[in-house]
Length: 157
Image (cartoon, rainbow, N blue to C red; front, side, top):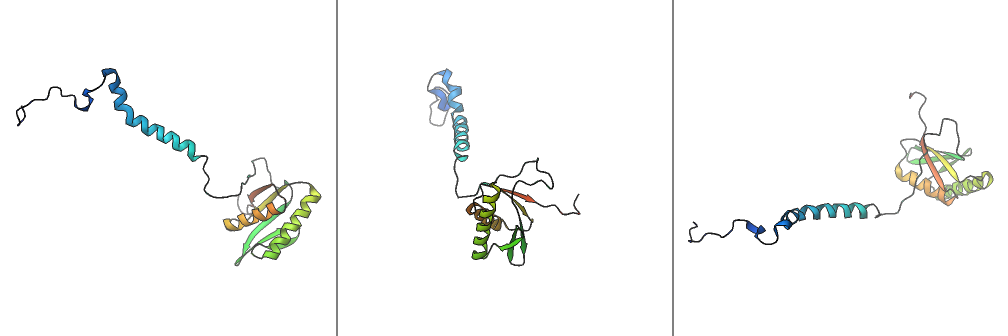
């Protein structure tokens, strides 16, 4: 007996309304909602892109030492600058005129060879921003695919 002098008719709580066969579904509704929300976020999350980028196709395991996929450029950092070596010529990525000359030289080289793939051998110390600038210059020069690889040192096994 309660202090007010009445006793509840049923002690089923909030589940006293509705058909007994729907009670398990009603109790699982919050979990079903959470699962549906996670599935929806997973589906939508894969299609959203927040910023522009450059698509990079990395070389597969079939590329062996000494095997070439087309024109090859060497990208390496020096004090306060990043150098690009291509066809026995040196270009500075930070200098606008030198970068434009690299794009023109690359375009002429691609026209001769007919290949649209560029293999970039980059030192591990090259900044990501410089690699992106290099890929943009290659795109301006007519390259459709840039393959980035790291040249292993002779001492590494």
